[in-house]
Length: 387
Image (cartoon, rainbow, N blue to C red; front, side, top):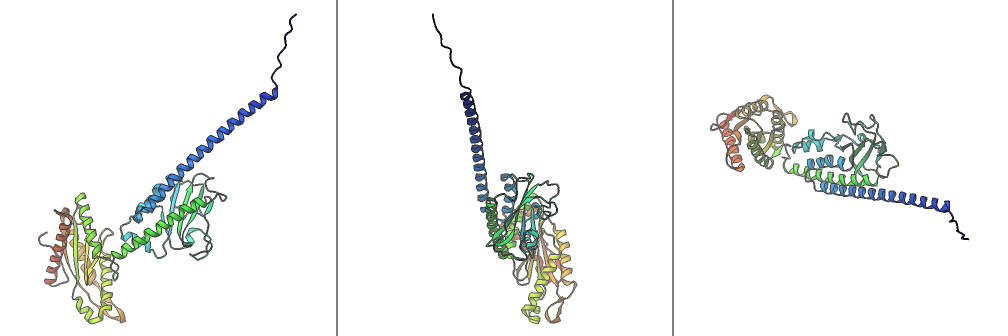
């Protein structure tokens, strides 16, 4: 008689253990994949920010720096809005940058504040603070944050207002906005955005300082208008541009009549006051695109963009009339009657030959016309006869 042994069934506990182990392994693999994905994402973000740092550190001008910030930062940080507020108490920064040709219409997210109060930090009235303020993170408030995010139609949920600090001095704020309500919360660490803001602050201070020095080097310290160095450079640039775009440019040579008598009568300080007033009267008759410079002594020049000879002569007549229109008051109640002689020349379609040769020719023609105006009795406008 044959006997058979029946096999014992597998223990339920062993099966459950194997199942749990497989599930745990799956969870670990998923968690590992997520961690690897996050590490790769963070590495990519870090690399993008390093490239951004190098980009702004290498910016050679104010518009190049501002353009890099507004072009690159929203993309690499996945932000819905980035604005920049700069403290500019006496509008010095804006004025100098405009004189250097910066078009602020191209940077609507660049904001200027007359004082520190507009930045939104709790600082009292001081600029230098110990300790310096920390970034403000939280939900977007359309009323409280209207100054930092003035653009209409941008739907934000959370914001970070980050102080721009140089030697514990606030120079502005970097304003970051997101449509994600969880992007910026009060509990979020701020080391990263503070580091980013410090790099931006250093770059801003350096570029603004360099632009200020550039402006000083191109400006007449007495009258505040440009100097000969600037107009020589600008003239070459405008001739090249006029040739590309096929328009005329004109040039005026302006001389204050009998200026030596002014210095002999009221002294050099009185003469300086006359020069400043005449410069102001000339400038008031010009467009923003035109350029006024003091060539030296009592001589001024004006470069008119996209202006033919008739248009230039019309503007020159307005300038002549403005100089002679009213007495110029100087110290101690002295009133002086001042007139000016003006020579005008035009380089139709920017002439021929090199830009340097065309520039020399244009200035020489205006100078020749000025000679005719002075020899013809002064206080008049003369056109270059050969134009």
